[in-house]
Image 1: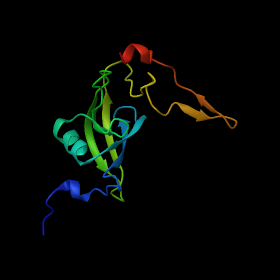
Image 2: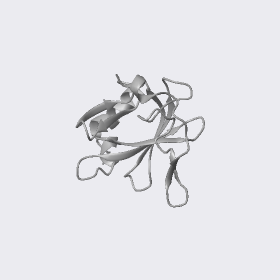
Image 3: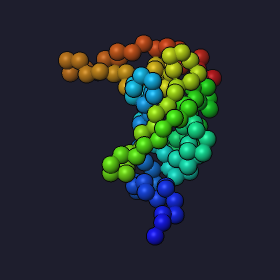
Image 4: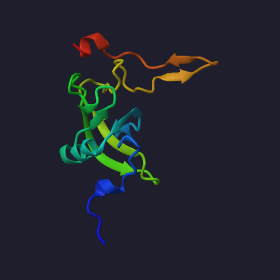
Length: 132
């Protein structure tokens, strides 16, 4: 029996969400982790740009809708357990691309150093000037 919908292959959590990792296509940098519901994943596939589900706002979040830091999606992958999505993206809106709301290239800018988290990436643009 053929599958009715590729979205049915995804293992959604109890809230109907799946974690999504955004990785920069050219550099391989891991930019961020976010969440998608079925509608967000379907829109991402249709539009070729990242659309996430904002848990804090309880609505779809078109990456870059406020900041202009859009993610163009080149490749979508599902892990071996079908419970994590990987997007290979180009981060637009600033050079180098800003994925983090703190104005940094990556959300993973803190490194553990002697029992303390230290930010190791510079702020590329003041968040106050990004989110008005």
